[in-house]
Every structure is written in C-alpha cells, then in structure tokens.
Image (cartoon, rainbow, N blue to C red):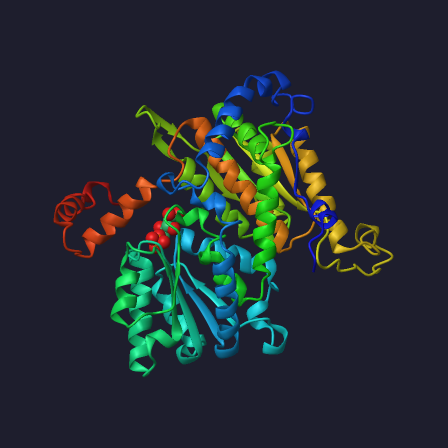
Length: 474
Ligand code: PA5
C-alpha cells in the first residue's frame, strides 16, 4: 500500500491527557505546573536533539528509521529464503533481544498464528525462547524438528548466559543430527565485540546481522534484532520504520503542546516527583498485550538509576505494571480506583480493530443480557475502555490515553519511537544515564561466578559467604 500523507495523518497516534489535568482531577497537574516545567522539557529535548546518533552515548537508535536501506534489503532477501526453507523460526535471546520480536509478532500476526494451517501463515511457525526454564526448552524441542528450524541467536554481547546456554544446546543437537550450524543458524550481534563473532569465524562464517554500536538492547527493535524476525513473519518492516520516522518528525519541536513524547515524559516526570511510583500500561487490545512487556523493560531499565550524570546519589524510576483491558478490569482496577494514590495509568486505546465481531441478538426475555445484542465486540471493548477511564477520573486517579487509530506496522513503529523518545526525554530530565544497566550487569556477573566462569573467583567467594542463614528459614 502506498503511504500517502493522508494515510500518515489518518494513522497518527495521539495523546489525550485530559484526565491528568487539575481541570478534571482534584490533584491533577495544573497549567502552572506544566508551564514551570517547560524550561526543563526544553533542555531535555535539546539534549536528545544534540546527541542524536552518537554511538558513544548509546543514542544510535535515533537514526535507525533512516540509515538501514541496505540492511533492510538484505533482511528481506534472507527472510524470503527462510520462509521457503524452514517450518519454524526460533529466536534465542533475552531482554532487549527478545521482547521486541515478541511484541511485534503478537501485535501484527494472527493471535493464534502458530495454530493456523501453513497456507494461512505468511511465514514459518514462530517461537521466542527468552528464558532458561529447562522444561520450556525441552518442550520446545518436542514440537519442532530442528532440521527444519532456523535459529536466530540474538545477543549484543554474545556473553549472556541464557542465550549462550540455549545456543550450546541447539548447536550440539544440530551437530548430532548431521546438520551444519551455518545452514540453520543466523546470528544478530555486535560487529566486533562479543563471542558470536568468534563463533561465526570458527564455523567459517555464519550469516550474521549487526546490532550497531550505539544501539542498546532495549532500544534495538527497529534494528536487525526486530526487523529480521518481523520480516520472516511477513510484517511490513519498511512501514514500521516509516511509522517511527513519522513520530520522530512530530517530536522535532520542543513545544509541549505539539510533541507527544515530550508531553508524556513531562507528565510522567511531574507525577514521579509527586510520589506516583507506579506506571500502569494498559492496552485495550490483545494485540498490544506484549507491548506492555517491551515498554516495562524500556522504562524500568532506563530510568531505574541511583546516580545522576554528575555523580550525585539519587534513586529514581517508576515501577512499570502491565495490565490488559478489559481482562484486568476484573483483577486490578479495584486497586487502581480505591488503593493508594501512587499510580499513573496509561491506556492504549485502539480506535478501529481489525475485526469487529458482531454480537447476535438473543435472550430477549433477559434484559441484563439482551441489551448486548446488535452491538459489536469492538463497541463493547471501546465502551469499557472509556468507562474505566471515566471511573478512574471520578475517583481522582491520574490517567491518560494514547489513541492508536488501528494496529498496523506503521502505528507500531510510531508507538515504539514515541516510547523510546519519551524515555530518553525523561532520563534527561532526571539527569541520569538512560542507556546503561549496571544493575543487570551485576546479576549477569554473579551468575558467571556461580557457574564457575574463570576470572570470577572473588565474586564466587562472596556469594558462597552469602548462603542463607538457617536462623531465618522456617
Ligand atoms: O537492554 C539491555 O541491554 C538488556 O536487556 C539486554 O538486551 C539483555 O541483557 C541481553 O543482552 P545481550 O543482547 O548482550 O545478550
């Protein structure tokens, strides 16, 4: 489909922050408070604008919508071959190397994709192994024929225990089955650093895609990390990148009233400083369910920091909570409405679902049921979204709604870039390093020590000394 300006406008994602303001919520944000944050927002915007594309600051992700023409062409060619040759496509990766592919798969493919007959799928069956649960690994192997499976090992470092353990298992099985690793494996990794480069060389050159230097895991969905799996699934990756570029364009201005990412970052920043330590992401769409998981990592790992850029101690961040509309109305919304005033709820509202699903008339003698007949499930879910936002507003709870005209590759690209920019702006407002993750690295190193990786003897001794105290075990 040709992407006209008209279509771009029709698919524009919009933020409605009515229910964040003191006009509608007793303890909402006043215009005076917003105005008082304009200067900070402007400097956060300038920080991101000035440092765009800088690898040394891990801001290479800002350029991904623009600098990948050759890579996209290569990915599309590879995806075509994979679709022709393989019955299954398995991503081996974790964190930033897995959450994006899971999100795009769930958003843009049939919700029961793997159960569809081959003729109704655009690509092979799709799996993402983002854990080292031994049962899960074993049971994946029960449902795939490894000879007919393409494994995409995604790891920037090539040193992540989870991913590399999975790789060792698969490499061993392929070897035992007499299959060359080069035939069935694709790497996505850092160009120079990292073990996958060494492994590739030792195997005589495994097909590899590069995760650019300045792109960290959680900002990598628009790089080959996300683009290859998406292309294999038949997703329009060019439209995804165009959606991201469109959002980028909308965010060129430092005007809070016009830049949706800067507005969201400022609203969240003000709220966090006012004790709103929990950020609920609640899409009213099963397709967007895993966007909450992807966002949770982006927001938590980027903002959860204990030191400012000038070395001052701080403990900032907001705990992301994942909820699904309407499902969690029957689980968590009671807490959101009447519990502590410690949350900001972000609704993702879909204006037009890809299916409407009419509700037939019936049960004419039971008005409690019959009123539903003649409506559609789309009307019902949208009504419930509106009703929940209204109920929360009446209860004085901060909430805002991001309207997604429809879930497609373009709007998903917009959403990804909106949240990535929002995170970068919020980090700049807190004056922290948004792009590192020392807390994650600490856990990785402790695992190395426990499993006897050379060079971690001191940490091993420390961990052994920290054995559970029998006095505190019941
Ligand atoms: O966002 C991040 O940097 C992390 O979540 C990483 O993506 C994750 O730890 C996996 O790392 P790697 O890609 O090096 O295997």
